[in-house]
Image 1 (cartoon, rainbow, N blue to C red):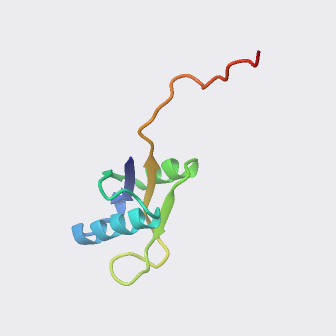
Image 2: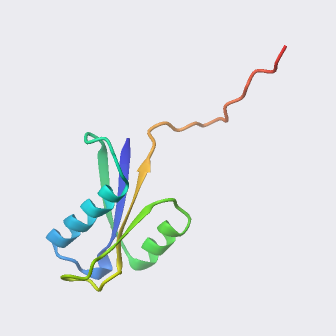
Length: 95
């Protein structure tokens, strides 16, 4: 299992704040494998909106206590399955 997380680099969050937001996004996915690979990418606001528009992901909104305005989306996370099928699974015809 792999988890992909994107954060909005245009928000100019400190390293610690970014790490915390990424952690919140991963936790927001629910129970995950503690040994999974986590891929973290900083993206522009435009790319962030594009990536979350059509994906089924968890979007973390900040609480507004420190560096970011309240309810501002900071990170998005989703699980990437390791299994990729190149052909649809076909059932054998009944005989």
